[in-house]
Amino acid sequence: MAMQRVSTASCGQLYLKSMNVACSQCGAKYVLKDAEIVAHPKVQFTCPKCGKTTVVKIEQRVDATIAMLPLPSFARPTGLGSGRKVDREAHERLPETVNAELSVIAGPDTGITFKLEFASVIVGRQGADVSLNDPEISRQHCLLEVKDKFIQLKDLDSTNGTYFEEERVRAAMLRDGTEFRVGSTVLRVTLTAK
Image 1 (spheres, rainbow, N blue to C red):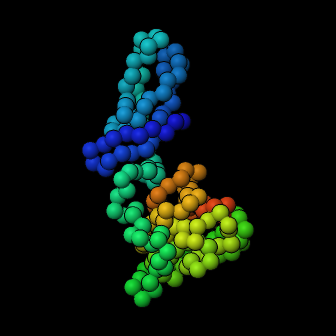
Image 2: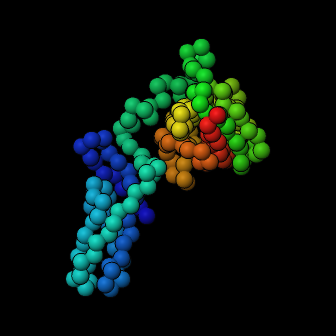
Image 3: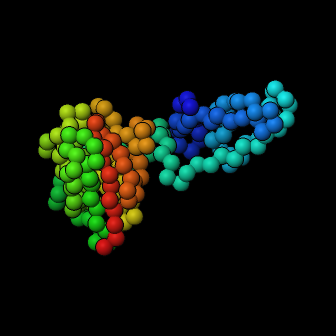
């Protein structure tokens, strides 16, 4: 599947994948571009080979990750990538209704689990709130903001990127059991109610 850029009126540009489809009559394969599918729950096309009409249902998962440019306000790092650490006095503790942990399941620190105590934590190398011994990650690689039912992941303009479902992302919504990668380290989020 190829990545393409689509301009929309509401949020600038969306980067989505093209969709591979096949004619329901003759089986001929085609690629539908984002501009053809992005705004519709169903797409109808006529096969150039057999002339028959096929209807394709577009199913986007609720938790699908979409890269957007320009970045929406919730995904902007607010200057944290420039070397400033989160001020513990200004940031609140975790919501009282949740427990949050970050477990290293692959990489140099495999087996380590970090109990998150604050609503905002920076993942990175030495000096970060969650400090990892991975030379492929930035000093301040990404920000995790713990909410009641999910964790908001924001990349802090890291050199090697933050990956969710094997796609480089600027922001993503993480639920209990979700995994993401920074450098060569794979982390799993555990978010449970108290």
